[in-house]
Amino acid sequence: MSTSAMDVRNDLLDGLRPYGQEHLVAFWDRLDESQRRSLAAEIRGVDLALVTRLYRDPGLPEAIRDLADRASSPPAVRLADREGRFASETARRRGEEALRAGTVGAILVAGGQGTRLGFQHPKGMFPIGPVSNKSLFQLHVEKLLAVARRYGVRIPLYLMTSPATHDETVEYFAAHRRFGLPEDDLHVFCQGTMPAVDAATGRILLDRLDHLALSPDGHGGMLAALARSGGLDDCRRRGIEHLFYFQVDNPLVEVCGAAFLGYHLAAGSEMTTQVVAKRFPQEKVGNVLAVEGRLRVIEYSDLPDDVAQRRAPDGSLAIWAGSIAVHAFEVRFLERMAASAEALPFHRAKKKVPYVDPATGTRIEPDKPNAVKFERFIFDLMPSARHALVVEVDPAKHFAPVKNASGEPSDTPESAKAQMVALHTAWLAQAGGDVAPGVPVEISPLFAMDANELAAKLTPGTRVTSPAYLA
Ligand code: UTP
Image (tube, rainbow, N blue to C red; front, side, top):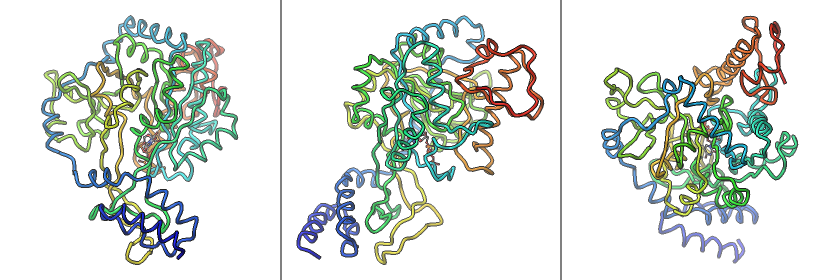
């Protein structure tokens, strides 16, 4: 080993020793020059003090119980309340004014590893169109373009990737000319990473001899990454005051929905979030609740069963609001929060992470969870919002998560496609058309964004008898 390679190793060891992480350079002499450089850069990029602190602090389940005990129903626009059209029409008009004024942008988070789906590319490239086979990315961009066209504006898209998805996503958008999105309207930014640690010892895992087991730092990494990449400055420069936030894995999301934005604006809310009414107490969604006037989310896995079972006097679930991870943010709120480093806490999750055995150098594929990963969640911004609001939506129209691989019981590509077809079939019926039973139909957002727009284009009495894609 050359003297300079020894020096680098010794230098790294000095930094690692106080945290018991010396094993990270155990295979230094087996690496070539470029592998050493990249490993050294990765190690220097890790905040070892933070990782140590996060591993040692197991979180406080009692604190969750205490919170849950003090929780009440959040201020909400319920579906039932707006059936008397007036309220929702007023909100829609308010949202439309903001859209027309060009003060709304969109953030799409697509940095996740999509491990459950098991697709070999970024999840946004997954073909979801039930007839068209178009990808999630294409679908989302078309929705955005359709809204922009309707209101005669340009709506910038802030697209978050991670080191796991960045290069392929950028190439994919370039190869498809951004699906029609003007170059200036696409701002791709890459989130940060956190190392996975051995659950028993807290040692950072090596994925390969020259590479740490790093994974994206959670969708909450959006806040720091958007600020760091200049995204918030870009919003300010363009006069964007509100950002519509959505996730890549929901093909039913109503991108920049005017009524949703209108409720957000009318309430003077800094953060507004879409929820669905939970069907049963332990449904696997984040629970939105109010604690002393502040909204927050408690994950289903943290909600004590007796608290989840509580009922309101009318017999409905007391903790009823399940987050579907669609939010509206005031840009000023994000700016304020981005300025405080500790704005978002880290959560721990036990996961299966392949690793290199520090004793032998062999790579091991664990068959049960062996590691702790640390992630930030964007919904943890909620308690900091001076005003926050919950807007209930109908899951049949707004929420079709693509989480699991085909064949799993729920949230699969097949279940999401079936929901898309059901919604588009319903639009066709409302627009005076008819679809033969079992025949899939898909409507491009660029053809119609809703039943009303479809009605304006459809010849009454149209009957669909074979798979159809209206574009
Ligand atoms: P999920 O938490 O469902 O994770 O992400 P995932 O990566 O898609 O899938 P699994 O858990 O590995 O199977 C919800 C949304 O948040 C984004 C994802 O891309 C998805 O849009 N996300 C998640 C990020 O952008 N970054 C992250 O670090 C995590």
